[in-house]
Length: 96
Figure (tube, rainbow, N blue to C red):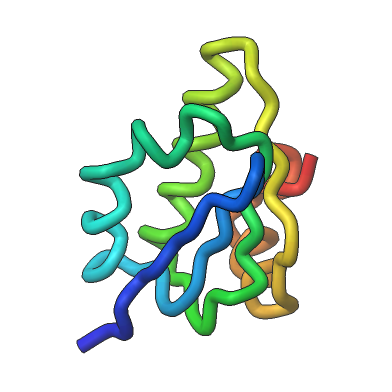
């Protein structure tokens, strides 16, 4: 069983804590509209684990922002998450 995913919006930064995986991300996804309305960046430094499904959610969020002509910065990327990003070849999406 995965740890819970928690998030908090402070000014324009959304802070994630816990685990972002296939078991935990739906709690955020089902409520994302209100959390993302004023978000300009997502800080993932508080995440203990991210799996490929969690990474896919981050890629999807970046795409949704881009489709609305908004930018979304993802900050606090750990070495483990960087490795996953490189393995899936999404550096240009996530890290830019």
